[in-house]
Amino acid sequence: MAAAGVLPLRTRARAKVNLDLRVLGRRPDGYHELESLVAFAGVGDELSLTPHVPSSLAIAGPRAAGLAADDGNLVLRAARAFREAFPGASMGAFRLVKRLPVASGIGGGSADAAAALRLLARLNGVPLSDRRLRAAAARVGADVPVCLESRARLMAGIGERLGPVLRLPGLFAVLANPGVPVGTVGVFGALGLAAGETCAPARCAASAPPAGAAELHAALARSGNDLAAPAQRIAPEIGEVLERLAALPGSRLARMSGSGATCFALFDDCAASAAAAKALARERPGWWIRATLLR
Image (cartoon, rainbow, N blue to C red; front, side):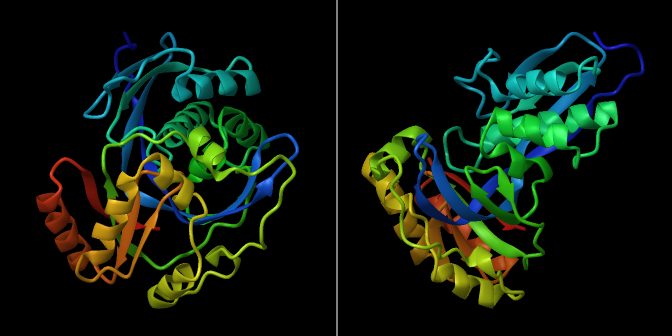
């Protein structure tokens, strides 16, 4: 139990959306080099930290089924990485409310880990710019560094190279997931690159993101997600999601995020995205569907 009067610290672990994703090649060590323009949604998991009690993790929420508070959980791995980076740091008990689908290409686990690092940093007076904190994030997972601040930017390499924070125009979007978990390792395996193999030069919109929404939509349309084809070979349901998103009234662009299976469509305004989400939910009531703002 927490000491009397001690309130939990809270934060939201916002969904990460890869607006585009280019695979540049596979390094001799087996890791894939990427470039991606990343934005963050207004939906996510919720994480709280009760300070100065034994470290632990409780998991609840509509997407908690099948998740375990064991050594492999990214929240607990993040806590261990923080303790190693900051010996003697104050710790506490976490409670995760899981709302994002698991293994869905929107960085739910990475966002949870980054949220744990943010809370521990807040508790111990560590700024997010601290190099030790950023190094701890990279040790936990490739997507954790970009989720630490959860702000739009270019990520490159295996996720460790981050560009400056970008002021993108607000992107009104609908996220949709068919309820099929897709493992990242399997998707990269289906991509089929040999160690040391390189690909064509990058074509990400992140190289010079336009200031206006219309211009950004156009730049993204010239880009793509190189993992979409191998992901669809593993989970053909992704193809239907993309088709239905593209067919929604007002849809400007439909694309898969990350390694799937979550996909997104972009719209001109909030009313159009909200109406589209309601229409799609009527057609596919079993899917996870959310209208949101990406920024």
